[in-house]
Every structure is written in C-alpha cells, then in structure tokens.
Length: 357
Ligand SMILES: NC(=O)c1ccc[n+]([C@@H]2O[C@H](COP(=O)([O-])OP(=O)(O)OC[C@H]3O[C@@H](n4cnc5c(N)ncnc54)[C@H](OP(=O)(O)O)[C@@H]3O)[C@@H](O)[C@H]2O)c1
Image (cartoon, rainbow, N blue to C red):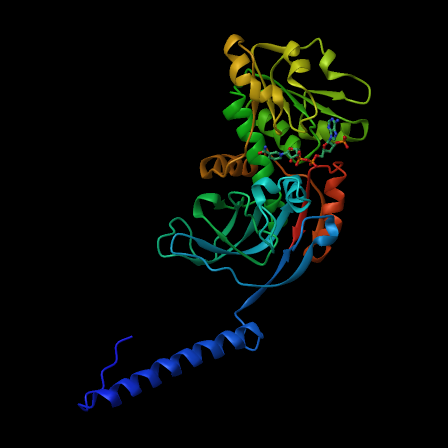
C-alpha cells in the first residue's frame, strides 16, 4: 500500500499511514468474522454432498455456496441429473485412490438444464440455451442446482426429450457409443453382443448398435426379455437359462456392459479380428497389451470421455427416433439416498434420474 500525506511532517505521515493500514486490516478481519458466523452469506444453492465415505446415509442435501465460474466456463442451472454406478463407487470410497480425502465432496456427472451465465471466452452457448452433457473428470457435482461446466462437455439437449429424459443420456450413452464405435470398430456389418442389455449402458448399447446397422444380440434375465425386444435386439439370450460363453454363434464385438465375463471365456466366441470391450478393468485386459500382439482378437476397456462430436451424434440418433432412453424411476433430489440404494442393487432397468427443478 502506498501512502501520500504531503503536509511535510514525516512522523505525522507515518502515523497516518499506520492508522490507515490498521483500519483496513480491522475491516478485513471483521468481514472474515461475519462470513464465518454466516452473518454475511454468499448466494447459496441446494446440493448433495458428503463428509466421509460410506453407505447412502452419508449423503446430505443442504445449502452450498453457488459455484464460481471462470472466463472459459459456463454456469448451468441444473434441472435434472442421473445416478450412475460410478456415483456410489465414489461415495462408498471404493475408488478413493482417485477421489482423495478432501471433504465435503459433491457427486454426479450427468446434467440437463439451462445456461445461466457464460464466461467471456466460453464459445458455443448463450444464456437460456437448454443443454445436456457429462461433466469431466472425477469431480462431478451434478447433484446440485447449479454447476460449472466446460462448454466442450455440453450439447444442446435433444428437442424431443424433456430435462429428466435428457439427464439420463450423456454418461451411459457416451460409454456405449465409444465402446462400440471407437474400441469395437463397429460397422453396419458387425455382429454385436451386448451383455447386460437392460442396464443404463447396455440399453443404449443395443439401440446405438442397431441405429448404426449392426446385428445385435442382447443378454438379460427373464424379466427383462420384453425390454430387450423393445430396444430392438435381433436375438435375446436369457442368462438364467443359457450360458453365453457356450454360444455357437460367433461375434465381432462382445460388449460386456456389466463387466461380469472374463476375456478368456469370451475369446473362443469372437470372430477373427473380434473385440471384447468391457466397462471395468481386468488383468486380461491389461495383459492384452502384450498378448494382443500375437492374436487378431483384442480385449479393451472403455474409459468414457466427454466429447462434443460423440454427444452430437447421440443427439441426432435420439432426434431421429433411433435411440430413446428408458427411465426406471425419477426421484426428487431429497430422496438421493433411496436412489443410491436402488442403483446399488444392480437391477435397474435403463436409468435412474434425480429431478432438481
Ligand atoms: N469404464 C467406464 O467408462 C464406465 C462408464 C459407465 C459405466 N461403467 C460401469 O459399467 C457397469 C454397468 O453400468 P450401468 O450403468 O449399465 O449399470 P446398471 O444400470 O446398474 O446395470 C443394471 C443392469 O445390469 C443387469 N445385470 C446384472 N447382472 C447381470 C448379468 N449377470 N448378466 C446380464 N445382465 C446383468 C441387470 O439386469 P437383470 O436384473 O436382468 O440382471 C440390470 O438391468 C458399472 O459397473 C459401471 O460402473 C463404466
């Protein structure tokens, strides 16, 4: 701080300077006191957070300060989000090696809502646009009234879906699309099998593969056969009656959406150049970096990424009526614990949505 008091007396000038510095310091300390005692509050929003890893009971719905966005980011008013298995894996601490020990933590990757503010350098969207997308990284905080998003994670939401339906799409549909197309090298001539075709990822997998012209078999339990038919599967395998690993049919892509098969068992039912793509890491997939060098067949694992082009293609498939999300249940935000309990049963058909607005 520079002080200028020009009456010619250096001692007096020093005292005035000290007085000014002290006053500023007192004001700053007083403001910190007011904020910490909540006498002055920033604008707050409703959000889900947790202060320790554990069961769904650690989830709390409370007030947090509105997020702050920078010039490259967009502030979105979230109307709905969805529950993905990764949310409860973060919550229960099973991937704390990535999520760390800093609390409170937020949750949620998928958003559908309205653009509320746009950073100076954030191109592509304007206030009021109805958008959807998957937040990047492990730091999702979509279970809240407002989120900060990178414009690259967003697209205009499909015109024929409402916010709840839109929120159910991004993470699961991007996973299915990237697994089948980027890793599976799907073409219209591919023979595809989707294991777990009634789940969040699997139900998009069947529809996307069909939309791209492939022949698709779906694996599900007896109670979900009607759903698999509705999704358009050409052939349905009831896993309670038939062991898919003994299949006489061979596939170009075995998409293990529920990741409960081993590559060693699936390899014999892959065609030459066939690909096994799974959603969870396994030793066989890691070793395939080496063993795959000596075989035309490959094992791969999808790690879903936000990608505006992929999301745009998915939007088009939805708007053309080729892909439609199935929603098992919609919960209000305050019932987030129940939503997590249901997701953890791993029996969800399609998607679970948390409605916020
Ligand atoms: N790596 C990535 O980037 C990525 C991205 C997304 C998801 N994932 C992971 O992928 C997995 C699936 O996610 P999701 O959202 O699809 O889960 P989900 O919606 O919870 O899956 C539930 C579905 O799985 C089916 N299922 C359960 N056991 C089965 C079995 N033995 N055979 C066939 N189907 C079975 C259930 O049908 P029935 O009741 O008929 O058995 C149910 O419809 C999760 O582990 C998730 O964490 C990974």
